[in-house]
Length: 337
Image 1 (cartoon, rainbow, N blue to C red):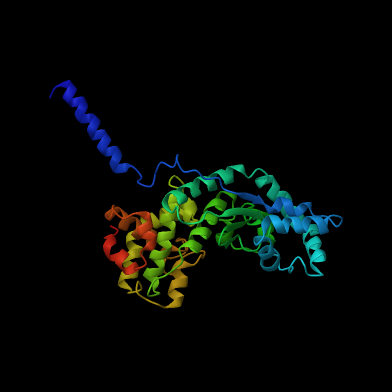
Image 2: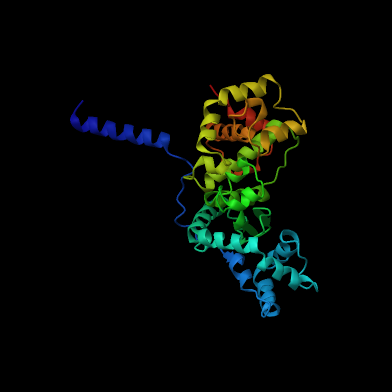
């Protein structure tokens, strides 16, 4: 073989190897024109004082409604802004010593929200690329008094910043939160929780049957969608695992799958089984205390990855429309060694 032919051969060999390892979800979004709207209710709300409340609250109502009404009634539970007692309740919340300290901690982490806004905007550019017909939400940040982390409406994602103050935050210790919850109450989890909250609203469970494997694969579809929205993001943040927990799942994947198959649990509709393998928890009881919770979700994710790898002609939109979870399982060829 001449030197020229040898170099050409090596060039195409390297090109082929590169293509084999290329992430198909790494797409070009340079032509996607999108600017994500970010509203800082956590900053705007604390401009309210006893002297200006009658002027500022209507301005906030105009800027943030209908989310502002939901925030008052459902998140803070202080009623409608037109209620006679509302002003007193709001001022009490704003002057509460714990809330004031939480705000100081939040400001130290999120006063400059630009890095998170950029991550979210990049993710929603991917989202708009795949689903141009679907709405792109506005994002509002707020303090909730440690209530629900993510709230979604048809065109809004609400993010409670006081639930992302760091796993060692003393407020969480004082609240007696368990370790497995605190480990995900960190700033770097904020973007992934917001995206997960949005896609789980946009793509609700629509299976004909509700059994363990269907729920596993449905959750796996949502995580695969996060793969598409943040193709270079750490997998551990998508599912909310520490590195060692993620590594544990990878090294015990065959045993976990064998257990579910041999115990005939995949097609079980037992609600307790779904909770045991799907819901957040310190560990998955059948797999021992070294296992993380939500191992059923992790396996469902691997099934969906296998399905998409084996069916490269299927578009992401096709995957999200496919609600026959047993079909996905059968066509995935999933069989961990």
